[in-house]
Image (cartoon, rainbow, N blue to C red; front, side):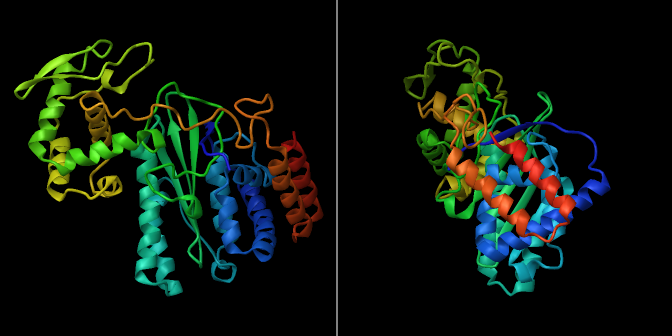
Amino acid sequence: MHRGVATFTLDTGKCPKWLFDRMVRLGRSINEVLIDEFGPDEFIKRISDPVWFQSLGTVLAFDWNASGLTTILTAALKESIRGEEERLGVFICGGKGKTSRKTPDQIYEWGNRLGLAEGDTANLSYNSRMAAKVDSALVQDGYQLYHHSFFFSRNGAWAVVQQGMNERTSTARRYHWYSESVHDLVREPHSGISSEAFNASVLNLVAGESDNARNVSTELVQASFPAIKKDIEILRRHSTPVSRMASVRHGSGQLTLLELSPHEFRYHPVVEENFWYSKYLEKILQKLAYEKPKNYESLLATEGVGAKTIRALALVAEIIYGARPSYKDPARYSFAHGGKDGTPYPVDRKTYDRTIALLREAIQKSQATPKEKDGAMGRITQLSF
């Protein structure tokens, strides 16, 4: 599966009750067929596939590129299995806005109800929390998360579907995770589709190319707080001339900062970064230096660590120590299985056709009314290339 992130136009307004009710009914019928034939773990896997998720939402009545599809589809799926979760073996927690913050409580409620081992429940909750932290602090792409949903099966398979909003561009971006694809929570963790929108520069600390930046950031906080503070003070005094080589006195010798050529960067976050020392940042860095996290994941997991702390460490690691992170947007232009024009890669028709064929079969076997089936089949036709 191609890795990436989806971007959609930002919708406003509210889904009409009649439409939502119809989505719940049809979703319930399709879910029953899919889970019965393929099992709950496979259902979780399919939810983590952004093309599958988007296709399902379209079949249930939403426009392909509508940002509202994410929140409404999640809510409809959650409602469609309400009261049947234990029989189906699938559980959905979280949602939009304030509901997203209830995700850990809902995970623990299900854990207690199902009699899961305390460690297993805690691990599910940890993965949910870290997915949100990664996409808000390690992928600094200008999108503020406002939707987080956590899907899991009785066997422990899990998926995360979360969405962020960029008010400046009036667009939304969706992030997908799947437990079997996550080998490292802070390195290439997403299972995803590609995006039609692409940012010229994103501080992308989950990229493989950012390995050195993550390692140096960890080493910085494992050292001492005065050393970190001194490095940030250097950037505070010398953060303006980023387009030339800057040399400053550091200790008993001379330190040459990394050259940031304007030919290499259209934009660099150090240009606008305010390195005037804030008491909050100082407090967090002191805490990290005291606790000395064993690795970058532990660093990120530390309470109070957010985007600003991560960015400060990344810029120190890059500008002073030469550990350049990736500034490539993890998004990839259009659709997970490729673009119609072959950009950035040709459409994977075989995979895409399997998605459509499976949805057709599920609709035909569902208990939906003939009218609902006809409508769903018509919307599937619109998905075909």
